[in-house]
Length: 203
Image 1 (cartoon, one colour):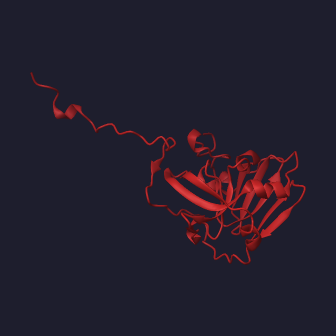
Image 2 (cartoon, rainbow, N blue to C red):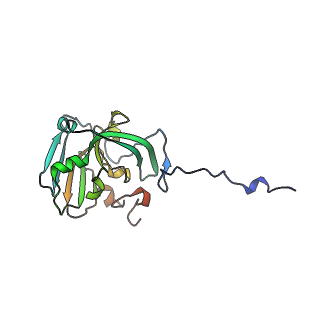
Image 3 (cartoon, rainbow, N blue to C red):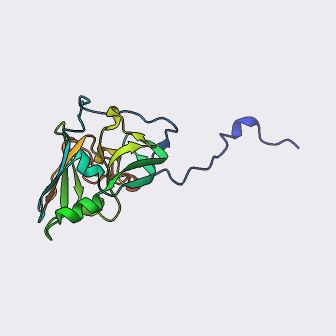
């Protein structure tokens, strides 16, 4: 008795890494550089980070003041809307929880607009940057964050697509309503949950 000829069989089924959200692939050791703007030269000694808007105590930190705060580290995965994911990565910086505790959001604050030194903006629900979900980050794998990846400092919101982790971040403005940022005005989803594949408006 003969069995099915070879043409009946396709590729061998491989186990998908459960850390990959739908539609994503593992970029491995690579870290693609995607940007819609000129990469700035940002002098850390001139950089400041401000939280303002609907807060009791609008606050601005310098580079040295930020580095004097308790340090915090994120270890986990990041996901780009262009379908690559980088697994088991690490970033160092400070948790936004401590910064928000100083600024003290008002009860009506529910959304945030992040702004970069380049004037790039992206919007986020306030709940997405609280309770250990977001950082101001300046190192990656123990080394200073490079300019092309947002160095010397960027926002890090790893549970959302990475366009929400604004490079060269300088300001968070708390608001009582949602407003689209740069990519959101150009068709990207307002929130950007990788596990729900919230890539574009209507997803």
